[in-house]
Length: 231
Image: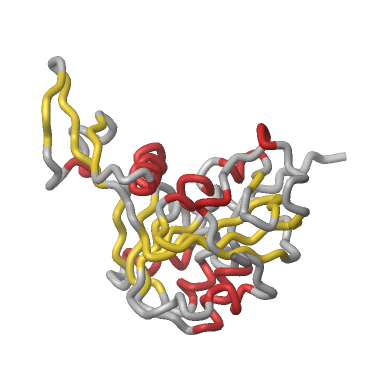
């Protein structure tokens, strides 16, 4: 089974449709599947629901799809760096489901492992808990959170082999692995594809069984918060 495609558009061919649910990797501006997001923008796929730690910034990450009004709903834990996100949310144009960061990662992992739901103390007594089942364990109250199962996962890794085994670099490992797990189809973009068998098995962060399609491309290295000292 050949998993390698020449371009992001080719890797997403036959997968995209209006109204679909997409899980996207990335943490801040690190590990964002920028090539796949651009391909979704160019495809014009609309009415999308995204599960992602954040929405990037106005002109990078999911932010480019907010600009074109292709996103209907976001399931996120942090949205503070995107002015267009804030504008659409406050004006009622964008639906938002706030999810604590650790809960979001676990919802993705659980969905990928076939676990429909789990109980957590995070969010008890806050707006996060509204409308959710509460249950007591050993005298402590927990809320039920549902596992996430997306139509499509898009992720970015550092290195892959031809079978889709992936290695991530540093912070990019936070959300990309659970994001990959929860998609019915997972498309990964990487900086380098190496021959099968050349990766040390002990260094592989995500096995290729989770990855269905793969592209290699050039990526922009952005700094989210640039701090300069006076000289």
